Length: 610
Image (cartoon, rainbow, N blue to C red):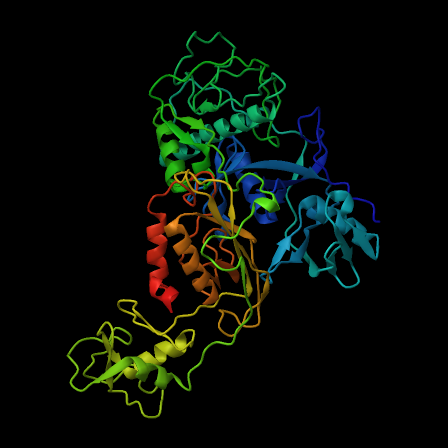
């Protein structure tokens, strides 16, 4: 195996700064949800360094150099990246590497992801790959870095040692990362000392200062959990409001002593540093790591202090995360005390259940349904399908056809676009159930644009004619009874539904035929109460599954990923023992709501009698 690269987090007396007069490459990185530090591009790093030289306490608007990063701001004092539209905050750091390493030469190594775009490797991996490449090693094993991949330079590919899957990789030249010499001047040390002046009230300062306060509170909460068993609680001090605390502790605060913080809650307030900041010391590349003196004494938060759950700032609460984040920001900026509390975790799954305790659902035959890639039901031709459900109108009213937006008394807007034997562009028909009228040619065009399954759906009232089917990929649906109760249904056992859909290739009915689709989060577990209405919902869900209506392939609202399996407008409860995400119990209206959603898909109680 090739020798690992020499790039690392360098330090001078544990400060994380290069020795005096020693040049180092600066790489700014952010911490993702998997605990990995991801590098910003060289252009973004140059931009951050330029702002740093001008104002060490300022903020960096990343959209000024990369339009894809327009929502993001970096607060240099709290060392956090803040996303303005969602309120999400992530730690950032300033890392150093040898000028002769890959970032110093502007060399970037990337792998091809599932969307056929290129993703850069973490910087330490990039440096390791470049070192092996320069030494002309034929291959490189990344297991020592915690990744089960082999890099083959001859084929420029990466292979997963477990699955044997190969991906392409590439080496490209980019802008070299910025260089720095020696330590940062004293005026640029972190955290910035207290000021006796009033905080600026401009929009940008309000945003940055209050973001800093919120991030300090979250960091303190995270560290308190980390050090829970040690008796020492490191506390990151805030410098948002200079000169005074927002509320005093119950017994007062001694000079030089950190204010005492209640368990599970942290106030966004100015506080006196718990340790003396030595001249020249700088926490630039160690976000929020100023250590507390070791006191863990706590007092209660004064009555009337509003609480904002941290979960909302992370985007997992029922309140829109941007609204929750900006509410806390504005209240902090206005000098109002806001307590950021750690939200309870959702209970997604029931206690373990043995196989002997799993029983069939009473009144429902079987315990599993499988679907294969069925051929779509096709009529002889689209005209036959349309004619089956409409009645010709000899004298149409003078109103719009809501498909082509032309008047019904004129020809269809699809005249010249579609040409179907026996259907003239001026012919108008009325749907039998709802009575809405359209050009026949427009209905044919609408049918051709859809699933072509022999059914028709009124574009005005959504009434379904025939049996509607969907585009759900092949998979398996299991259902059984478990001996546990859902909140709100303590007298009933629980019906558990397990959906499992593997990845595959899109068919002709999908958005991108022939292209691979992903299936994230499977198997998915869903829950219903074992009562009369719950069993009715299960029976209808089985019908919807057989008609391929539960899932479809599209773009995920949660991750933004395209060409992936997503829910198809029939809501399920995936949270077993709580309702923190809005997808759990108790929810007294859920069963009625899902029955209405099934009816909108053409799945009603009448289908159970057929």
